[in-house]
Length: 340
Ligand code: NAD
Ligand code: TYD
Image (cartoon, rainbow, N blue to C red):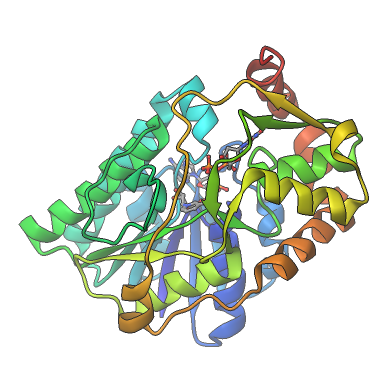
């Protein structure tokens, strides 16, 4: 199997690359990534000397660059697309890049697949496209009802994939993963932000009442779900990939504080809620379980505590992101310093 992994220098993409190279001796992976603020070659350090791995810097909106990467790899069997702008808060702050990468970039990859007769594409999407649900769980046939510019852009990408399959028979399919946690996640997202802030003696900015619910999935389980869809999913289909671990943000915060031996009163700061904040995400994964034979393996509390310890032990990885350039400080100032 020869893969082009777009967005492979990000959090989940790099977990997929590391894991697939470890699992499959005969796979070759070319990573194609723009290296935005969220892309980081440190995430791929453990595979950089592997002759089955290669890296090309480029933008998925640039059709020629994608084609060049495919030719450079000597042709490919499939594209797995992780490349996206991914942070809900940044999509509220400045949505335009989300529309470009998450919609136009996906469209560009579909065109490349069509033009070159590539036999498979997996579009990595999110449960956020369904929107919030108070009770029960969304299945793949439920309607899309995105709330944020991020989820609306991801939904736009999904609709392109389904339309290309219907119109041109493009052999593409979609996975919709739930909130993912693990090592190497950019420290703007809830878990790495709270853990690294806590490690630095800072505050944990909990939005609103902290009772919003997310379904947490370990990055390794997410990678395995995408692998299962790549190997046995049907073109034109959507597969939900969820951890089955619904927790409030308060519960997540409590585990972080407990693991690090800190108290709520001195660390947590309840701040103004995120606009349009989805209350609860929940998906049914029966289709992935029965059709793909996939199911999550990582115990949630053990996985979260391991993850917290990983950030504690790998300050080299996150310290330069938070303090090595002005990028993170600018974001923090723009988004957090004005919140009450
Ligand atoms: P991330 O922000 O950590 O990484 C995104 C990667 O895409 C980065 O390496 C970045 O450089 C690259 N990229 C961005 N724009 C690009 C462009 N125009 N061309 C090429 N590369 C570009 O994201 P992540 O958390 O690893 O998410 C990966 C995928 O999984 C995304 O599509 C996201 O929507 C989806 N997803 C994420 C979660 C989650 O909880 N993080 C859950 C479900 C689905
Ligand atoms: P996040 O990691 O941004 O993922 P998503 O919004 O895609 O689900 O946020 C997870 C939850 O944590 C979400 O309900 C918003 C909340 N949150 C905070 O309370 N404070 C924060 O500083 C951040 C980044 C998120």
